[in-house]
Length: 365
Image 1 (cartoon, helix red, strand yellow):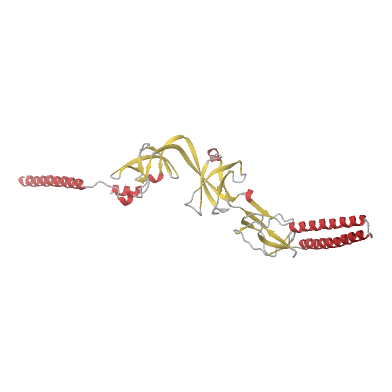
Image 2 (spheres, rainbow, N blue to C red; image 1 turned 120 degrees about the horizontal axis):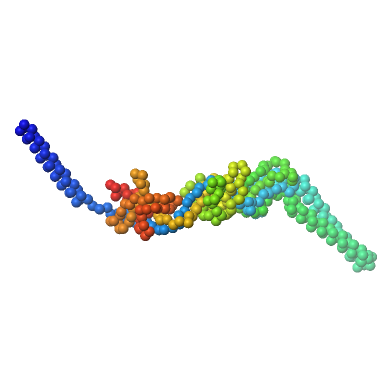
């Protein structure tokens, strides 16, 4: 019995000594722990933001497509019949006003040329006759009426020549029996419906070329019935495309078409965007985000300041480079680069708005 008491006493002594050693070890570790300080290299690139109060906004996304502005599009139709020759442009080419896009070899233009040649010959003939009658009148061999008749004939010949020149100018201005297809504006060839050797007629309702000035483009978005009440003319929007996913194009709702498309039951929303570098092209798919403002105010912070870990959002409150507080927050919503906060921060607080994950990792280690 005494033996068991001795063993039990020995175990109790060992446990007490182990506890004392552990407490001493933890105390030593805590005494040696150095508070975190943001290093100089990180401090130079750190962004400190201020918590603000602003209008609560909601983001609603719509699908759409880039289109050209129909007010800045010209369709070139044939004014004469004939065969297409010398096509020199392709869709996507930039052309200048007056640039020749192709030719139409036409019997009509040949007849206009013949009419001009006849008119020019008639002008020369009537000029000779007028000179003769004037000379005879001076010699007393012709009357003043004869001179007047010759003058009338010459003026009529001149008028016929002018008319023939204008007709030829409108219908080709080429003495080789060719109608020159010219671009009426500066812009891009967005449609080409002809090829060399094609026969065309003036009653063809399909244009030869379509030229568009793409300095401004439209974005047509589809608004379903459930969202019609949530969009308004003048609302600010962000437009992104598959081709440029990191680039945001800023604009406003220019027009809402107050009718539903009978096929897919959507209302069309139009946004006009400047396109100075021509990077937006017709038929590109686009995502339109409408930033709809609420009447309520809410605390707003940059969304880059948020840290999400273990099903909880946090922010880093900055007081000094040696005093950074990790604080949980309750998020109302995140709208693009802005997060709206219900609780956890106050207006005027300073928080770390960039590289928060790095500092959070250092604080947690």
